[in-house]
Amino acid sequence: MGKIISLLNHKGGVGKTTSAINIGAGLVELGKRTLLIDLDPQANLTLSLGIPRQKVTIYEALRGEAELEPFTYKEGLDVITSSLDLSSAEMELINEAGREYILRELFETVIEDYDYIIIDCPPSLGLLTLNALTCSDYVYIPLQTEFLALQGLAKIKQIIDKVRFRLNKKLQIGGVIATMFDKRKVLNRDVVETIRKYFGEKVFDTMIRDNVALAEAPAQRMDIFSYSKRSKGAEDYLSLCKEILQRTQVSVEA
Image: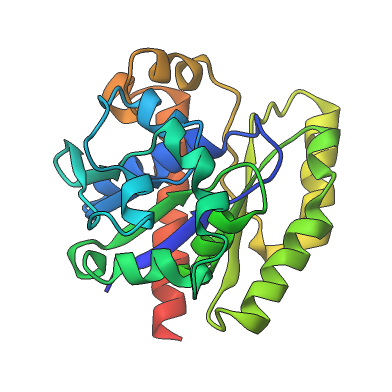
């Protein structure tokens, strides 16, 4: 059965979608069959991979109009796409019975087909994010190594704790990903030190360095491994994925 990982940060511009895409692609490089879920109404993950508008997106599935229909982006990597229609989903589903469990029920038809399911959450803490957390095994928090990125961390942790207590006992913070890191900058190093004091061993050893190829890849509608396999971005995300495999396998064994 696949492990479900949500990438969450209610602050935009921290590398959340970039991380979702390239963790998914990196896991495929390591031989794992992976499904990406674009749960953001902005559909940045879908757009970044150049996937055309699909007849069935995550929106139609959440409304109960269809089952999940994965789009094959490349061998080993499938995507459940999003669209702007998803922006109305929270209001439309608010009166649904068991509305926090809709995504969990949808995953029952695909969970056995993948080693990992990666969810790109919206930059908010509403019903869509709640659905993601309710069905996830782990939450990964991408954090830009700048001062303002530290704001709101306590709120994220509070939400995760509430979901664990009320809706999903297995949920845990699986890791914190430092993004856009430049070791030459004192501020970046200081922010990482602060994150480590707050989250301890939850912080991944691999830091995603500031790398132009990571910015160029979405413009070419590619993941970093398809765009520039020898770049620092590809090197960092492959290293991160090796850590993810080690952590999740240790957790399963435990």
